[in-house]
Length: 87
Image (cartoon, rainbow, N blue to C red):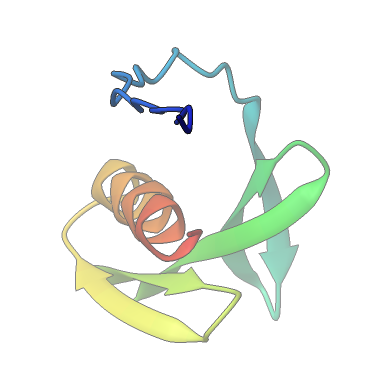
C-alpha cells in the first residue's frame, strides 16, 4: 500500500491597507516664475509652473507634461500619475 499526500492550496483574499504618505509642496521661484515643487517624503516627484494663462504639471520621473487650469489640478495630476506609474 502506498500512502499519498494531498495538498490543498486555498486562495487568500489580500486586502490593501491604507498607506500613509507624506506629501509636501514647496513654493520656489525659478527665472522670476513661481514654481510649486511636489515631494513625497524627501523625493521630488513633480512640479507645477505657470504657462501664460494656464499651468503646466510635470512628472519628474519620465518628464511627462500636462496642461491644467489651476495649481490644485496640477497637484492632483502629478499625484495621480506618480501613483499610476509607481508599480
